[in-house]
Image 1 (spheres, rainbow, N blue to C red):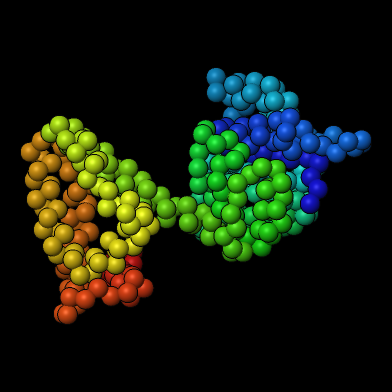
Image 2: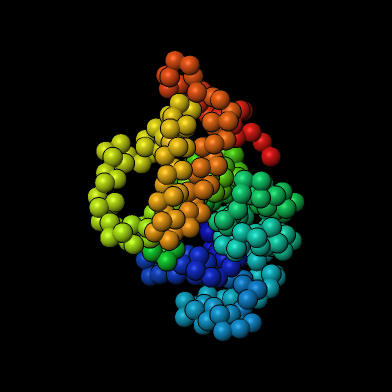
Length: 308
């Protein structure tokens, strides 16, 4: 796949990180074929341009990288062979709708916005009349730490072509499948776990610090390392059907202990409510045997978690 013009929708941390990688001497623009009549060009659009101090900084950053930047979507986008959408998730659909009238058929539209699966599908539908090739991308690392080489999951009908081209440009990508929205869904579902652990870590370690036990607590969670994190989470969920009552009773004591050292048991109370929900559903098998994971998830989904 050949690309002579790349457009970046959004020039914040993500867009500028990608732009910096593409503009580098050893990047996409710096590796333009010798003797080419048309030099490779980078364009950027950011509605915050020059609106305030941050907007002025965006313009300065673009000029330093020799990236043409504008505050609005316009005719310049018609030249783009590849479009990276890196706007805030709540603005993803607006960006897609604003760009669609200017995009040429066959252009590769890489949607890196943090959105849900259904939101990705809405973006795709908004772009369908333009005839672009839509690829849903979930960024699984920090642009601040990794730049354009932040790990990414890709999904969509044209995912293989997109992945091959991105790898050539130094991106770290993994193909998830052909269903648009699935990459974004994996990222948000992962966030349920990761951000939950973050909140639990705050509650746990603040309480540990007040008791002078931070090192001791951290030294005694090595069972996670032995099993591997994914295996550990699977084990907890799989055994939840059998052991929810015992764990619920333990968390009642935990809440009291946190309160005694002046920590509001916000996350702990949520855990108590979650386990109580399972206990109230009376799911524990009479024989006390742990069912296979698929069976546990089916039982929990139907009889405990339910639907909104």
